[in-house]
Image (tube, helix red, strand yellow):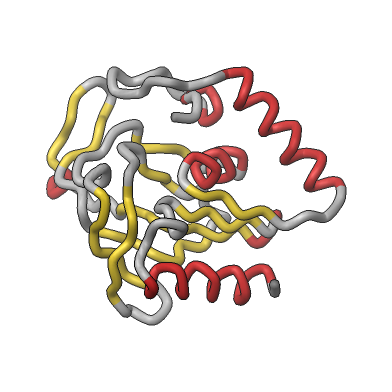
Length: 164
């Protein structure tokens, strides 16, 4: 987990294993990369970190995402596919992020110290965000262990957003 300090929140009861030293080091790497005009690709924790550095925040705990695979939708084409998923936190993009994929897997999200039913309000389970201003692609799942369709979409997004 990234530290909730990165997005201005207190640690929730399910947030654990945050490593302040690692967060500090990775923020420094990001700043140096920005100075050099680098593009960024974050997978899982890396995606969460990039999202926080771009002004996004996190649901500190969601259910139904740590089971291995779940469905998601390409927000551009509307096509559905399966994504690899072994996380319990979920990105909330800032206003400058472009949501590329979403899922509807969580039933509950953490609000303060309790889990609340997601149906009470609209919550997107954002799986992939692109931040054009820093050329940052944030992919919540694990394409390296995913299926063929997930890997193809991941590399298509790299090509479309980063031109690589």
